[in-house]
Length: 111
Image (cartoon, rainbow, N blue to C red; front, side, top):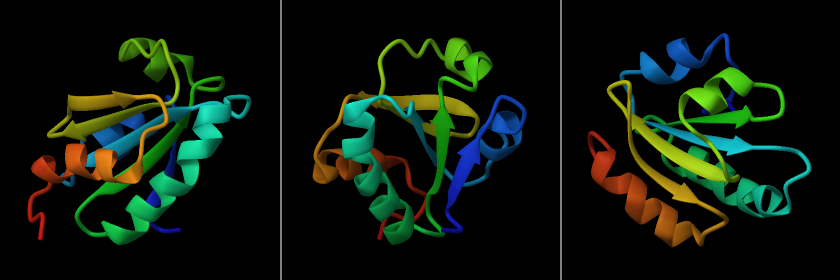
């Protein structure tokens, strides 16, 4: 899926902080049940909002730097970044509509 990128400590600045498009970052880990529950929702959003939103998945077990930098204590944490800044976040597995309602105000052309 072209709109779904694996984020790492080494590419986070380029893929997220320097992105001209708003970015949804899914901080997750393979052992996390709620992370697995929200993953299909994140993938659907990546597909449906392609061109308006970039989606980056960061495995917190493998990327301590980024996780610590943004104070990620609970996963899944779904962070919304715009212009290099964390502008909103949702913690835990939430319904798709709730996540979409948090993302939409940050899109350049929401329609």
